[in-house]
Amino acid sequence: MATTNGNSGDLLKHFEALQERVDKLEAESEVRKLHFKYGYYLDKCLYKEVSPYSAPSSRPSNPSRTLDLFANHPDTYVQFMNGRCKGRAGVKRLYIDRFSATFVKGRNGPVHGFLLDHLQAQDIVDYVPGTNPPKAKGRFRALMSAGTHDSMEESGLPRGLRQWWEGGLYENEYIKEDGVWKIFRLRYYPFWFARSLRQRLAAPPNYVPPFARLVSDGDPLGPDEFVQNDERLWPDTRVVPFHYTHPVSGEWVDEADLRAPLLGTDPLKAKPARVIGDSF
Image 1 (tube, rainbow, N blue to C red):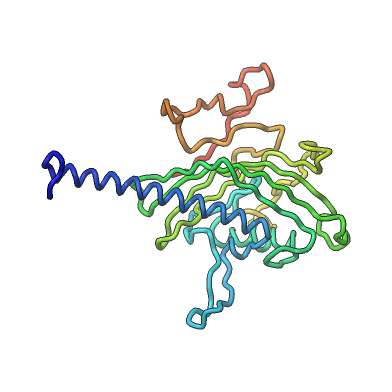
Image 2: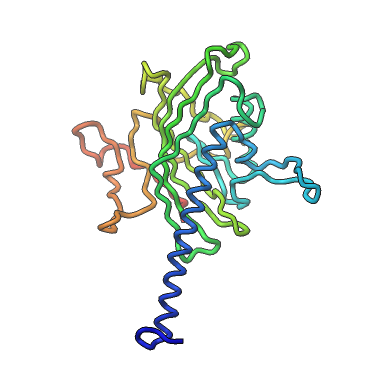
């Protein structure tokens, strides 16, 4: 084997470096597509395409199929508001038993008049090299327009006629399972809600109420555990921790700079920054 400098070892190292770059680009592309597909499914209330659910298959050789974007791992969870729903059972409880039942009365798919568009943007996806199974992290901004059309019958709606805007952030982790990238830990941080264009950012406190009880405390639709970060909606503007360092300096953002003190006050006396304590 000939090279420009006659060293086959250099060629092998060059090939391995290129392979690592290809693996990284391929992984980040697949994770990005995975999350965007998740958003498109949520747009149309296709909750069974997202969460663990066995449904009849059109293929005679396969009597059932699992429609699941989440990893079959004991540490898988979904964080929503102030709660975490853990494992495949918790994921199903949130999307099927809670969201599907509340928004579309248990249907898998849209209903006339109900809007739930999720815009996913400003994506930062990073493959974590040297992990087995392969892992990655992703940060996405979410902007949602949702609500019930005035033509819908209010008496049949669980929460009546309402329209709202919503802004939030995802800071997620992903894992490659059986050769397929899946969501490992989904953390959604909603920041603000607005009841209409005329009242933007003016929704009252607890417009979307936080979880009050756990499953173990008797709420069949509650989370498995509460988030320990005292999660709140706007006006709480504390930063969701970044999974990546500064692209030039390589430094992490100072903890005090992730806080949200009152204007003109000492940030060290403000509420501590949000924390993600179980990240790989």
